[in-house]
Length: 173
Image 1 (cartoon, rainbow, N blue to C red):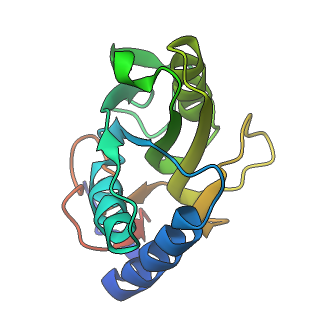
Image 2: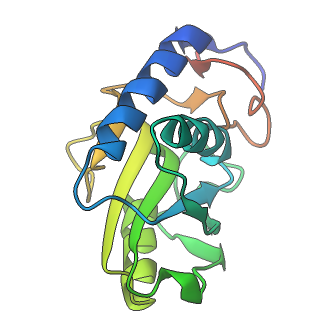
């Protein structure tokens, strides 16, 4: 990371949105049975959201999904590769896919396809940041923050491996 990111959303902004999202998801129908965080960018958001959902009485099983679309670049190459896919626990269950950022939506499309092929009853999605691109192929069902432009880092999201541990979400200058 050559330049420091410009903070967009603070720790307290994020905590407030995660709490609100958890309340909304916990009240939804059908309720999710399984949480499916997408590694690597969604792991911090997923951990916070899972704890918040538990506080709202929704303690979910977890099935990790590892997909990759960015690699070391700031632009997605358009191809989503699967490193670790769904397991047999998804069959007949309502799956909540959790990711850090929705840019073009291809990663969420791939996740949805994988879980439906594994027999999931339904697949919903939640992201920390939806860039709200007009050319996105999918919209998340739930979003903490929307309409962000630029390349973002922090809160689990990185710039070629750097910045994941930042406690805020920032945009690279």
